[in-house]
Length: 227
Length: 261
Image 1 (cartoon, each protein chain N blue to C red):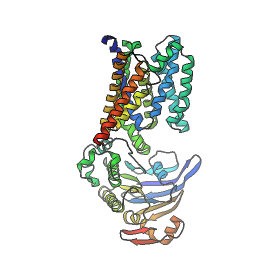
Image 2: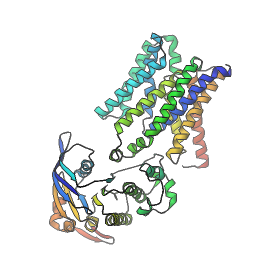
Image 3: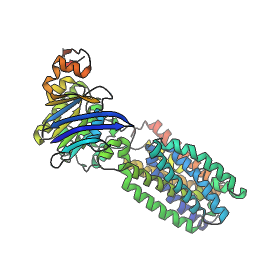
Image 4: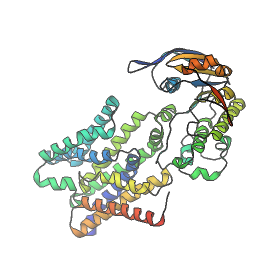
C-alpha cells in the first residue's frame, strides 16, 4: 500500500527527518512513536504532500487519505457540529456520526468548541472517514481523551480498519494501545530507530531503544501503562 | 435635511454595513480586529490624492488599500509575521502621510465622514461593491474558517489558504473604500469589528453569526446616518456611538437573561 524510501525532510536547513524507509501492507495499522520533536507529525505532512521532501513516497493504487491533525481546537469559533461536518459534505447524522458512536442527534447543533474531548475526537474521526478513505492518518487521536474513551476510540478505529480494509497510520504515546491495536510500529527520533511488529514493543531492549533508558511496564487496573 | 437627500447616504451605509459586518465576522474570528481598523487608516493618503488631483476619492482610497493589502499579504508570506504586526507597522505611516498631504479644509471630512457629500453614484458603487463582496466572501467563508480551525486540515482538503487570505484582504479593501466617504477614514474600520463582536456573543453557529453581524452593521450605519441628519453632527462618530450602544445593550440583555449561545 505504501512504500517510503530514503525520506528526508529539512526545515530551515535542519534535518527533521533523516533517511526514513519502511513498507506497509494494505489493511494494516502502523503505530508511530517517538519523543516530542522526533518528526512524527512532519512525517504525516510529508505523506500528505503538504511540505517539500527528498526521497520517495509511493502509494500503490488510488489513494484517498483521511487525516486528523494534532492539537486541533475550535476555540471560541461559533461553528456547529453540523456546519463542520457539512464542510466535507456530511450534513446528516445518519451514517456519519452513527459510525463513531455518537447517536444523540442534539449534538449536531452544539458548538464544536463546547464538546468534550471524547466527543470532539469522534466528530473529527467522522469527518475523516465519512467519504470513504482507504488510508487514515491520526496524529495522537486520544491526547485529550480519558482512558475509557481512549480504549473505545482505538476499538472503533480497529473495527473500521477491519470492516473497510483501511490502512491506518497512528501517532501514539501509549505502549499498551500500540501493542493491542496495531500490527506494526515505527519508532522515530529524527532518524528511524525501529520498524517491526508491534508485539515486540514490550521487549526491554526495544523499549530502551525507543526511550533511551530503562522503562518498566506496570500492570494497571485498566491494563498496562508505560511509566 | 429632506429625506430624499438622505437616500444616497442611507443606500451607501446600509450596503456597506451589511458587507462590512459580513466580512468583519471573519476578521473577528481570526483575531484580526486591529487589521480592519488600521487598514481603513491606510486609505487616507489615497483619499487625499483624490481630493488634490481632482478624481473620485473612492478610487484613490481603493487603489491605496488594494496595494497595501497585496503588500501585507506578500509580507505575511515572506516574514511569517502576523497580519496584525505588519499592518501595525505601516498604518501609522499611512495616516501621517495622509494628514500631511490632505488640504486642511478637507481633513475633518476625510477622517470622520460626511453624509452630505455622498452622491447617488457613491450609493450605486457601494451597492455593487457590497453585493460582490458578500457573494465572494460566501464562497470562501467555510474554507477560511476551516483554515482557522486547522491549517493542516484545510490544506489536506486542497484549500489554498494563501489565495483565500489574498481574496479576503482585497474584499475588505473594497468594502472599506466604499464606506469611507460616509463614515470617514478614521472610523470606518469600526463597521468591520463591532457588529461582528456583538453577533459573536449571540451565535451558536456560523450561519446565525454571519447574518447577525451583517444586520448589526446595517443597523449601526443607518442609525448613525439618521442621527447625523437630525443633530447636524459628523456621521462617522455617530455610527460608532450607535454600534457600541447596540453592543452594550446586547451585553446587558445577555447578562440579565444569562443567555449562552
